[in-house]
Length: 497
Image: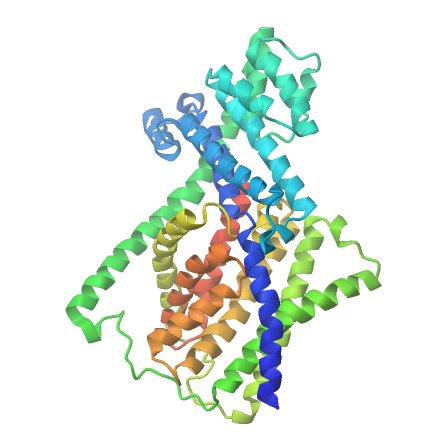
């Protein structure tokens, strides 16, 4: 009877799981947005004049700025915006195709269609300014004429005479009363003051441009040079590990003894039960059903929430899922107490920090390489974790702290206990250690519900599993997991600011 119930629950959980994965195929990745945010930072940093501030080596600063922004950042920015525009237009075509009758069409909501159309207009507007600032007025005119949305079209009608005919707008304040990023606003104002021959305003604007450029320069340094340095060191460490594995073989750090399994007192049914009931049923069925009903019962309108309120809701939801999952895990293995010695080990007086930081340095270049390949496969589609979009736009310190608590504390604790502490060792009863690492990493990636993230997260999961097998200490993968999520949130915060 228990197995029959588990089979039914498996079928019940597979439906929303597969549905969520398929729905993510129709969603855009956050990567495109991140690249645009970074492109905007590059555009600001490219305006940096090393002679505008007192420093001992303006030539060295100029060289570093060029290294960060490239030889021709403006052409690179146009290429990047055109790439994201092409991807967005392809998605719009898929969502609005009247001949589409597949399940993909049923996932296209009016909200998604409207958001995509608005985003395309925003891209057209910014591309027009990019082209115009480079003197390519025909391309700028073409982009502005392609805008269909009313709000963006009003601004385009203001920009077209300014750039194409050198005519000051009747309402100059319209150039600043927009959601255009800093660089695009500054370009418009520079053009306006040039037409007006307003030298005091030009000088004041140049000071603002240099201040913003210096800040952008520092931000780019943090999100590019620091990860690059760590990743480069990690790549060197990987090469060392490969050479060592070739020369020392069984004595190498990469070697895992085939006998390094766990003494697992329970069978596959317990593994099945923990993940179907404790992870997927709670996370995919119960909470998504119960929480909206609870909000409705208390007359709470979630659509009107601020970013801070969404952050709190995310933390509460994840905490409930973690508590329920750990309770199911504890109840499932309770009858097997006392557990064998190696299970769920937490050893504070150990070298877990070495394994955690070492794993992070190795993970950076590996996951980056896999992500680059992944981009070619999915071409901007495949969805992303919703918390990433929220964190990218959150400039509320309280909200960011809550997101950090969820992603960098709660997630490493819960997911490492479930996937590395329980699943991986349990699988060694049936398959070799490397097979257990790979299979647990695959399920770890699938659990994040985004097709485009499966390969990168599986790569990260393999490294997490390897670190746990070698260290036999849950603190090591928890530290690695926390460092990874913290680095991601830090980058999102810097880009979003």
